[in-house]
Length: 446
Image 1 (spheres, rainbow, N blue to C red):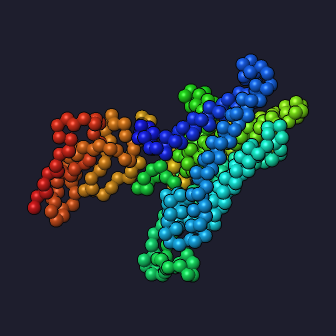
Image 2: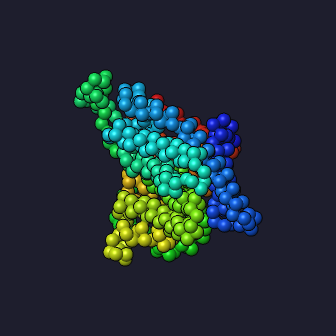
Image 3: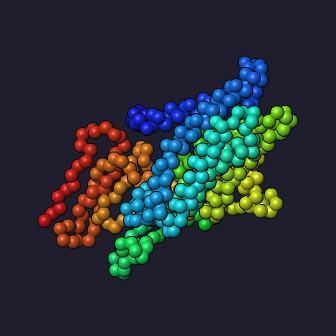
């Protein structure tokens, strides 16, 4: 998979771009924090290294904007024109699954405008970096441009997830009504489309499960070490675990969450230190640096915001120990124990199955093993069952099946007689072909 990805020329260029950004950003970070003071003892040396890497990062991000901006202008033209073929093209980029969303034109326009704002802010920052010497650059202008350049795409990604653009919908043509509607009075008419919101589900719709009457958080907030592997991942790889958990809960794309989380937690540090580096007053520079670190700490409120959404969506119990407000408590927990809060959210998602936007208890047999949630079908219908040694036991979508026979007395019908052996399809426990994996059913008596 990774070899196929890297063979694509565009992916190779993107990987090279990410590598250069990571190296220059790391050097810039070490210079700003004083980690290279022993290797670069004089201030002039540190300033030179800072300026070189700052210009490299400025060039890299400006190149990315120059690459993306024509496409964003093209999307803006399509939005202004808004013809049927333009709508389909835009849905592929901005709508989840490329399907119709309510008020999609307005929501797409908001996202496109924010992305344009990102490009223009980067161009302004590039002009400040190239047009002024380091000692003459306006600190307020640099800080403002960096803030807008980072905040605009971050807000666009969050808006895309929370708005109807990031939700699943079922679209079907209303053939019974026979009515025709159009997106605009002057546009060609199309069949009326009924849009019904489809809730994200991890299980098949045929599973007759009942929602948990009172879903609850699994484990206490400080039960971090109940699962050692989860504890280490929550502490040392919080952003990745957070993005993965949000995606499986139906809150948007994993990579968007990871990048947005990193931006909120790291961007203030770079913004304030880049602004402070142009000041000659040492006390002001230290104050700005400390302010950036504190604002990075408040970036954890992004996790608190999504904890609030998770609690409301699945009707989980609220805690009011902080100011008597559940939302304030959720944010407080993420601020002062982000790894504990994240581990509790992951444990809760592991404990339940999500069906039609509801948390359902996982079905187990007497021995605590998961069992298939698919209801029994009518007699005479093939049944899909898993063997005990199968890795897919308890899942509704096994990959390999074998055909078995089971004697089942049924009512006499055309083409069948009582006592006919009916086939039962069962999953094969191994992937090797030992003999005949599938046996043909017994021909029915004519």
